[in-house]
Image 1 (cartoon, one colour):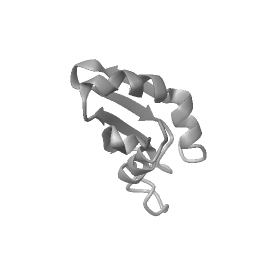
Image 2 (cartoon, rainbow, N blue to C red):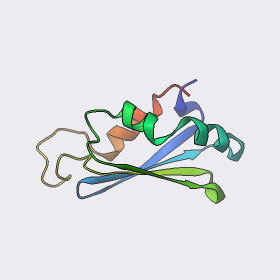
Image 3 (spheres, helix red, strand yellow):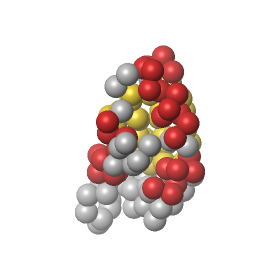
Length: 99
């Protein structure tokens, strides 16, 4: 099953860091997302794009997982010459993940 069947994403671009929240449509799906969406899985999925550390925070009260990805935006949205690898594009890539 694709992640987009269980959740949606919200993102933010902060300099060269990306914040990406995966929000479960149903609170009861959060444990599965916590199990499947580890830092290692995200690193593998975004290999070559996220070059720095990835931090993960589980926000149980709102049924979400937030990732902070460092060195992910080719020096930052306003200075990057890279086309369309910013937060929203990466969140759509993540939602294609099999869980």
